[in-house]
Image (cartoon, rainbow, N blue to C red):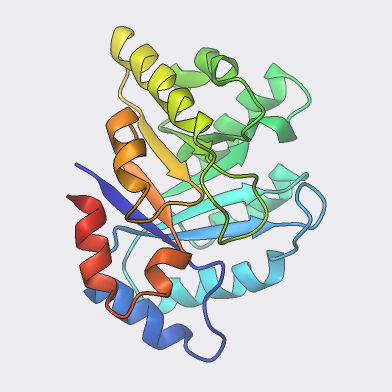
Length: 219
């Protein structure tokens, strides 16, 4: 079944409560929290996303899907574990070696939170394979991370297919999340390739009716 994780990266200031509650009514499955430090990616949303994440915890029971695009992953895990998200995803590219990847996986699990690992478009999907038995989700960036409203890079669909094939062949139970440029025109491609969680921000938040577009993407 396809699930939708709505990115709040471009949520309109002053309308947070209205938008969050309307998204909940529209049956989004997760709130996607894009945490950026201005170093790993150019944009800095760190304080803004901590604030919105803490606010969501107070007014909504929907799970949070926290995507860390930061250099200091340990500090970010400590900062966002307090909101008790469903999952925390960090970037493979932020780690200096395999030992650090395993250390971060264990750190997230010790907080009783699911673990995801994300990769940028230029990172080979095969680099994820050795970590798959220890995590819950792989996030395939279908755009360059750091800003919303980009166009999906079509080559990333093949990357999702390769990952899905490996997961099936090795009898693993792992979610595949696609993030970037996901809208009604592109969602079928990534779903057909094997993604079962779709991150969409601009396409949903710009829509007149959240429920209609979320329902269409889930079909």
